[in-house]
Image 1 (tube, one colour):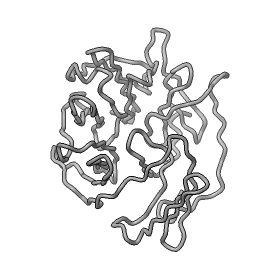
Image 2 (tube, one colour; image 1 turned 135 degrees about the horizontal axis):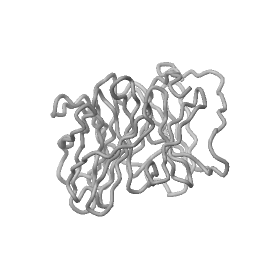
Image 3 (cartoon, one colour; image 1 turned 135 degrees about the vertical axis):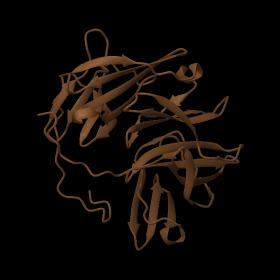
Image 4 (cartoon, helix red, strand yellow; image 1 turned 120 degrees about the vertical axis):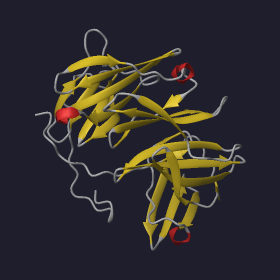
Amino acid sequence: MEFKTGDYGTPTNIQFPFLHGLKGIATLAHLDGLLCISLQPTNDLVLWNPTTTKYKLLSTPTGQGLFNNVNDVVGLYKGSADDYNVLHIKRTTGVTTAQIYSRRSGTWRQIRFDTKPEYATRMFIWSHGTLCGDTLYFTITEEWDVFINVVIAFNTNTEKISEIPFPPVPPTSVYEGVLANVQDSLQMLLMTTSGGTKKKADLWTLNGDRWYNLFSTPPVTRIPFSTWVTFTHFMTNGTWYLMSGPIKLYEFPTESYPLDRFYAGNWFQGNIGAIFTETLVSPTHLN
């Protein structure tokens, strides 16, 4: 898909080349056209090149490379000598462990990954890693009790970690942040809700260990939808129309909003809906 125009060519159907009995896949990370996925229901981690259809199963008989979708997160990065690596972080009660898979050697090794013990509990929700430069960034959030939200930075060269606070938000707000690499700059889309109804978005960029605000949207009132609802939407003459069910139609004049484009998000988690766009190259690293 061409980002600026929204045009796309004839779609190509890609058959999954994995084991029989597969019920689905979950995409966890991507880099240079490679996807790190988990197979369902076996929970095996896999490196897959959809362009060439080649893949590499990362799980071992000793239990390495098995993904728990509740407690585990991963990050994908390129190490020395163009070696693709998978950082697999596993959490048990009070303990966080990490292993790194090397595509070149085809082996796993364990590393130190010292974080606060509370981050290893199920109270905290971790994001998968966002690669920017030589660092993988993970958000860690807890919004129901202690209200702690931080970013963990993993330096892929030194394999050391550091902790970065979230951008400043009002103390009475509920908020979530989504990380993205935008032209080699780490940015966070921060969604805040105040008073249970008013919602706004702020885009921040990280410079060193400090966040700088790029733009903010004015607070808007959230539109309530039922839990089970389907959406129909279309854009025409600068107006975005959204229909929920057969009787409710919402009209959004996009010229009145300080944004360049509107894209409908077809996936959400919690209070956030988001889409990011990236150019997909077609490497042959798994030939």
